[in-house]
Image (tube, rainbow, N blue to C red; front, side):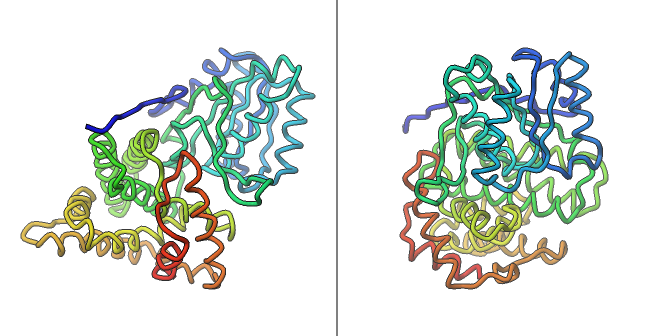
Length: 374
């Protein structure tokens, strides 16, 4: 039996209305907080709610709500300097994956400030506002490495990351179309983990659950379910995937989704949506039994089908969903130029040098995959 190592930093608070705990949780670590949030969270007054909850526990809170995707090095540096002068004790990032990666980068650089007592004892918390974040249970983040001008994965300082709050209620106002893209990206992450040759009994169990919950959430969303049920199912899928990726390195398709996001500033959820059926197509011949099982897990009726037919039904079902939701199906839908995709393949291959990714394919193979999705 292969060795399984679980090393999960921080605490995950998951469930309806757990956002109400943010003040109590943050108060364990200090009384001066810096909140880094996506600007669109003012809609629904989610940012204002967090600030009120912090104030109710006597925590002074400074808001920065204009950080860009991945954050420029200047923005990050300026924010770290601002945290120093403000003697910040707690950094809280609230938003999607890009905001959380930027928040982790800022918190890590701030913690590294020499001869600064507040920085040396600082804490980092995050509030997830999308269904999935594969770094959630890793004490690491992905960001631009200015030294080599490409994406890299960086470790966080020991004992900095304190935990994540996931409240499906924050996601209640998301449109059906955007819910669909987030769910497709969640299934994309779960499927690659499920198909990984690096997997073991625990990761297979986790990714089975992620596919099942993600499939249920997608089906309920497409039926027009107005309750929180689809969002709860989706966040359950994301948590299970994050648990899987706390054990297993992310694969080449995930690496490509990050590099395409960085190079072309396309939302990662849209990229995962496009790549999902092509990822399934790629494994139809080599992993028909696993793909057949995955199709069944997301709700496809495979009774009476051969393993090959059942395997093909996964991507067929996804493409039907894409058509119903009116979502993009090709990379060319984003006005990309094919020759530039080589750069994304090169950068994705470079992520194989990190502990968080396993990219066993050549640049040519990665480029071939992108051409099929183009």
